[in-house]
Image (cartoon, rainbow, N blue to C red):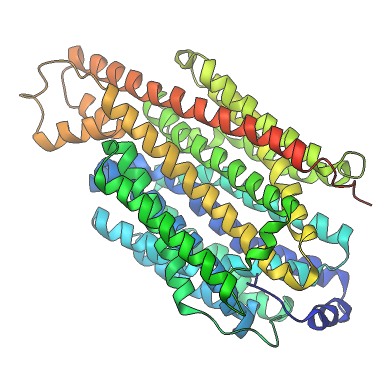
Length: 519
């Protein structure tokens, strides 16, 4: 990916460079490794959270930051790293990021405290931002012909969404057989094929005349993301207060300054003119909301399956295999479909499927086992696979050729923002609802250490651990109280997801209705 591409001549040269078709598809296969790594990393950790909570004893807020520190830094730096890729080459940036990510993953696996784990996750976000910006723009250069590009983008999207579903399976298997830090070590084998064959197979591309990188814009982008997410967490867990609302207001103010600066710069970090295209803006919104719903759902489903249903991490991961298959299949099936049905209606249908999945959770009874939630995940996965595949192609197709790099950068930023907001917003609301609705039975104060009782009031994992330390007569009551409190938050977050997905489906059908069928 790149922040912008100014020379259409360079793109044309890349398109006409003699390459064997098998090398193109082999290059795409190698590009899937960083895509899978980032996607798996986003969701694998959710299945390690109960083990992390038991080993490191983080607070509820720390537990959320362990999840969110990585995508927060990643999303804030994607566009900036795209600009760096313009200068030094996208393949080179990809290789540098792979080396750094693999090495730091090993160090993070042995974090001794929550603070160290949060710091390690944030540092991984820095190198992750080097990985993702290159993939879509390299695909754009490797596959200039629209039909081949559409299939390549579908495979890319299937790899990302499939990796998100594969993450819990990998994470559950590793945690059960080793320890929570093993989920970080998966980066090493995933990066080896890219490092071994990427330099020889993936063609290098870069902007021959890139604009100057604007350091203040990079700083402003971070000053937008970090305060807003912190504010959302603070308001959700502590209620409306000066700190939370002030952080959100500061982040939005910095966003205004950022946008105004981009309009004034000759070579902006983020080309704001792309958002004037309604198709482009709606496709970005669809991407963000699809990932928002998917990651938010997996966050609470992972905890429900392990802590309330009593599944082992690997068993819970295996239970999600149908959703993994549905996401991948849906992403590939819709490629020929858009030749018969307008793309806007396909995107709207995908978002409607996501709304249907959340409807099942909102109005369903969760006490009858995991079947309802797993069925809802399957429906949601079909919607995500459908919506994000076509919306990505619309993003690249609606931008002028000389700005395809900027379009790719914004698209991947949307992926990370959606993933981040799904865990930050829905996760924070879920945590707040749990803490406010928890009614532990009397008599625990004299039986449990103060820290254990505090953790029980903070997180579901803490409550289940406390239930294991008290007599059987109280253990069932603690589990029942924790399950009821957690379930109240699930219904609230599912209702929010339902409203957002239904609204997005209607908007996509209206805004994108005139986009013609694919040739």
